[in-house]
Image (tube, rainbow, N blue to C red; front, side, top):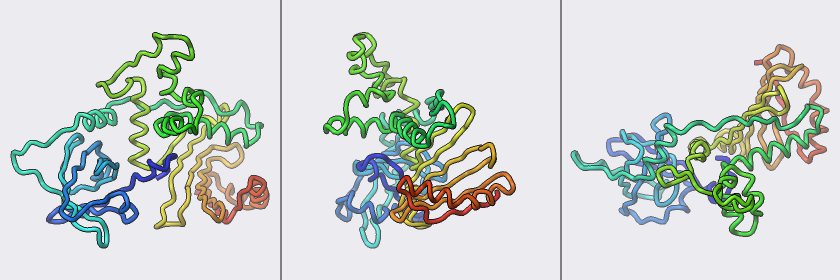
Length: 316
């Protein structure tokens, strides 16, 4: 999962097996998060439903992906019993008795409602660059600003500010910061700092952002869609590498419709050894053109401090 904060990177998936007695297994690398004794009971607060029988739940103070072989709804609280840590941490899901009322969490129900009913975040209205002739370094800087100031990482940035690692003016550039009392004080508008609350949990104007934050936690994919420059649409998706498929690192997928090459989807994998690139081109012959120019691409990446370990291109 690509989360730009070390504490949030501890959000790890829990995998449950379908059995006569439902059990939940925790990934081995999550073991340091759970200091439990066999037989100890914990609560799993269901926050939202995910595809393929997955749920986002809070267990022992941490968020996890659960695959639960039961029909549960957001807001419900399940009882889990810790069974063993060998070979993997395993819980037993306690089925509620017939007629027994299930405890509902107001926060869980509110978050579920946000995921279901909150409007989606609008795409950026302004292009990153004024023209394609501007240097790629400018595009990288603009894209970095668009992602870091999107508001998706506001809480971790708030923690950095509290620790003295981030200036207040940087926080005020994010949507939540612009709605804060601090922004109103800077602008000298005392009335502008009033919050428009939603169920007492958050400013209603931030609900699209909260929805995107939950989706980011659920999927582990940071997505951006907008214009690189006027008329040039670009889609970007960033995630942590899957160590079962390739070496650990960061993976990014960039989709563009280019004048000469046509549609190109490039998957870039960054690791300690360097960067590998796999391209799929929509126009016949575009992959040959990319391979023929691979030496120039390698040189340009090297000038940026990146070592190209692999380049593969094919017509899709």
